[in-house]
Image 1: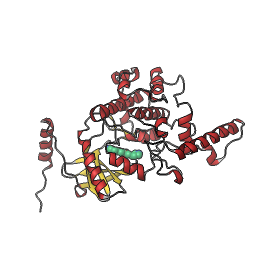
Image 2: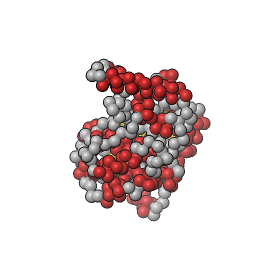
Image 3: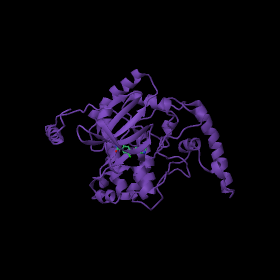
Image 4: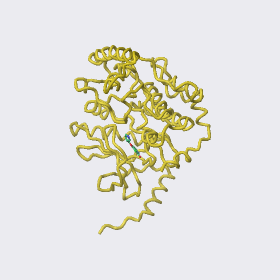
Length: 360
Ligand SMILES: O=c1[nH]ccc2cc(OC[C@@H]3CCNC3)c(Cl)cc12
């Protein structure tokens, strides 16, 4: 009979280590984790709330299926170790990752109020002052990832911005492993509808592409709906392209099929708008913007913006700066840390605790 673990001594030992700043790594494995509940699915994985028995720590465990050779999975596991060094109050903490063939399991800090997409879908549009705190968290989180680790998030959206019961707002699911990005890109078409114009066109994209996604995300949570006109998109799961394009989307090289289709969609889009202006209501699917229309819309139409005069001036301006279509003219996360909206929001006394406590 194994010696019963004395939780108290274990925890106080760990607290002592923490105080001494001693990094301790838990060797995580399935048999030490008890599943408590389901948290969500999306981004190519499922997330469950688990208890790590030995340390008494409640965690969020994300399980990702990687359709690749075991050597690739091992490489991904090695690359994920960088997450141990990603320490910021704006980044969800990482406890460790392990292989449970053919899955990769990642254990992270549990954020008990969940993701922003679920929050606004349940409680309605997020108050502008809370949006300010969200902008602060994402801008500083992105700046930390890039300045300290040269990491570009690649998937900024409300479902990857999490909240906990202490009113802390943190980002998760950033692209830390090159192999993981490749394997998801191959198996997952991943035409995220938060993609910047330059990324949709396969042009070189940078940390500024994350700023575009932040702009779309702030409008979405402030309005309580995905901002592109009657777009079907915006679900937190990846929307798939039609089969013939599946797997051809690459964030790095221009895609001839796509640009041809985008031009075609552009013609359709204009025709649709003309028809609808003539008062003929578009029935069924033709009225719902398909993912292709949406990609074409983002590339060719003016960027979305907040409705005039309904939000603080500097919030409108912040969003417009994030949504500058030309990446050369768009600011970096670091430059945005000096924007009035971010600086004022950081200093503002916002009762985030009250906001999260109202959520049961
Ligand atoms: O507590 C969490 N920690 C880390 C990741 C995480 C992810 C979560 O949800 C992710 C899914 C993805 C799409 N929508 C929600 C939730 Cl609901 C909690 C946590």
